[in-house]
Amino acid sequence: MEDLREMSWIEILLMITVPGIIFIVIMALFIDWLDRKIYARGQSRKGPPFLQPLYDIVKLTAKETIIPTGVSKFWMTVLPIMFFATAVTGALMIPIAVFHNGLAAGFTSFSFDIFFVLFILLSFGMLIYFMGIVTKNPFAQTGATRSLLQVLSFEIPLGFSLLVPILIVGVGQDTDLSLSAISANLFTSAGIGRNLVLIIALVIAFAVSIIVMMAELEEYPFDSPTAHTELADGWLVEYGGWRYALIVLGERIGAFFIGGLIVTLFLGGPYVGIVVDNLVLMGFLNLIFFTLKLIAVIALMSFLRTIISRIRIDQTVRLAWKIILPITIGAVMLTVGLLIGA
Image 1: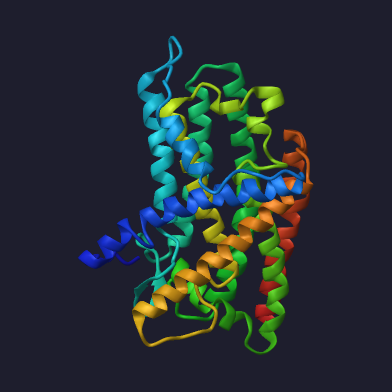
Image 2: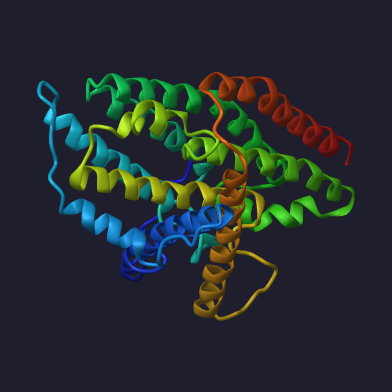
């Protein structure tokens, strides 16, 4: 595995501004607004104003934080910070408009980073579990247990769905299987000769990844860990003030990360087949293309959660193991079969 490359001062500046941390935070707030707006329209409501997500974060930071008696203040402080930092780390891995070896790359990209992505996704579930458990609140602990069960149930189907673009790009080619290489070579690998049929398997894996994304983000119909009518916000019930603001912002950055991962692995990332010699202009176009694709993925997820009501945690687990997992295994087998026969 290659060592992490050294960044120039220009790349460090970009990591802070655009398309770096500031861009990620702005996109996270925009994703929150877009999701709530589409969800409201689906229920014949007007929805929030454009700056409402920003107002919510500012308001939360001004509120008092109460630590329950007998609960560790240290862990109730550290875990939300770790959750936010994990989300930012994952988001910085998404290849958008920073070039390395001629490919769009993320600021924290490295060889075989696709496998580190799975660790980050699992870390989300583990941190949510611990954030609920440390509060010693029965509602929070029940929600945390549901969240961990849900994440573990969908982790294997997620791995199989990600395996489809990896196989398409990686088999028989000299590639490091980084997110950058997969997004750059996906359409070329899937569209040569008889391999055009691989798009069928890719579409199946893409559909599964959307469902897994909704489960990872605990959106309808997979919101049983935070069910308001049953658990009074579940694992979040004891958090308030700036700690709650960090968690909410971390969740929205997580939506950017997971949505960006889907765009990278299934929609070609920032590429649309247009090549410009000017790197600055090419980077700007890549940023626009990536953003439009991400908006489409978030809009699709929001539309689906509008038309589907919540399902119980036992139904979620059965869906993951008995329906989603066999479908993803079938997509992988179809991909392998087509690659062998090509």
